[in-house]
Image 1: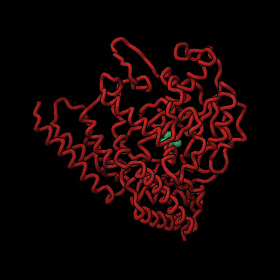
Image 2: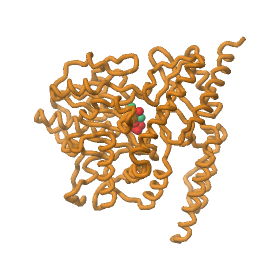
Image 3: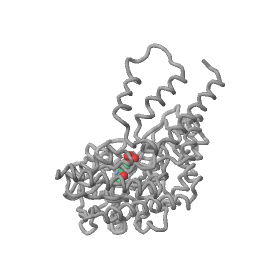
Length: 461
Ligand SMILES: *Cc1c(COP(=O)(O)O)cnc(C)c1O
C-alpha cells in the first residue's frame, strides 16, 4: 500500500496527462460533445465495494473526464468571466496540494500564515487598498461580498450599541441596504445569507451602461450600507465611487465594493481612471480566479477596519491554540482551508507589477478589437467597451439566439447570452492570459460566419 516510488511515478503520470490535456486544449471544440458527456456514466454505477489502483483511477479521470470538460482554461472561452491558470499558478497549486497545509490556524501552518501576510501586503499595494485593512482569502467574490458585508453589519450595529454576533438580528436596529439597479446577484445572495433581506434593498436607478446614478441615491445615514460595483458583469462599467463614497462619508454610511474582476483595473496605468474613488470605500471583494488567472477557487476580501472584520468572523475554542500573530480563521467564514495564497503569490511573483498590468491591458485591447470588428460588420455593440466586456446584438433577438447557439456548436470559441436593456445580446468576456490576438481573429471569423448562417435559418429565402 505504502510504496513511495509508486507515488512518484503516479505524480509523473498525472503531470504527463495534464500536460497532454493542456497541449491539445486549443485544438478541440470548447464545449464537450454529447458523446463525451455520455461516457460520464462509466464513472458512475454503484459505489464500488473494492479498491481500484490509483493508476487506474487516474486513467479513468483522464480518459473519460478530460474530454467531457469544457475548455474554459483554453484560449477561446469568452463566457461568464473565467480566466485560465498561469503556468506558475498551476505548478504552485500542485506543490501546495503536496504540502496539504491547513492554513486555517497558524499552528497548522506557520508558513501558510506568513505567505498570506506577504500576499495581502502585495495585493493592497497593487489594488490600492489602504494599508490598515484586514484581508482574507475566500472561495470567490461571493464569499468576499459575504465576509465584507458581515463586517459592515457588525460595525454599523456595534455603533448602535447592538452586538449582532451575540444577539442576532431579532430586535436589532434596522439597517438600510442600498444597491445599484444592476447589482450582481452574489451581493444579493450575501445580503440574504446575512439575514439582511434581499427584498428589502433600495435599488438606485442606473444609466444606459448600468452605472448607479449618484444623484439618485436615497437619503443615507449611519445605519446604511451601500454596495457599489467595479465592473458590471455585462457591460464592464463602474459605479461612480467618488461621488458615492463622498456622500457616505458625510453621514458615516458604509461603502462596499464588489470588484470581482473590475478592481484589477487598479493594476494598470491605462484603466485605473475607472477606479477613481474606490480606495475611499470601507470594504472590497475581488476574485483571483478570474483576471489574475489562478486555478479555481480563489477570491479575496479586504475590510478597512480590520477589527470589524475580525469581530464578524472570529471564533474561539480551547483546543484551537492561537498565537499573537494574525490567525487566518479569525478573518474568514471557513475554519479549515487550503492555501489559496500560494497560487496568488505565484501569479504576482511570476508576472510582477508590469506583467499583471500587461495581462489586464491585453484583455481590454482584445475586447475593443472584437467590438470594432463586429461593429464594422454591421452589428450593434450595445455597451461602451471600457474594459474587457463586449455586448453585441445581431439583427433581432431570435437572430442573436441562433448565432450564439451556432457559435457554441461550431466550437472555435464559446460565448454566452444576456439581456441588456430590452434586447437579448451575445456577451463576450476577455480575461484569459492565454488568449492571443490570433485567437480573437479566429473567433471574430467564427462569430461572423455563425451570424451569416443563422440569418439564413431565421429568414429562409
Ligand atoms: C463573478 C462575479 C461575482 C461572483 O464571484 P464568484 O467568484 O463567482 O463568487 C460577483 N460580482 C461580480 C461583478 C462578478 O463578476
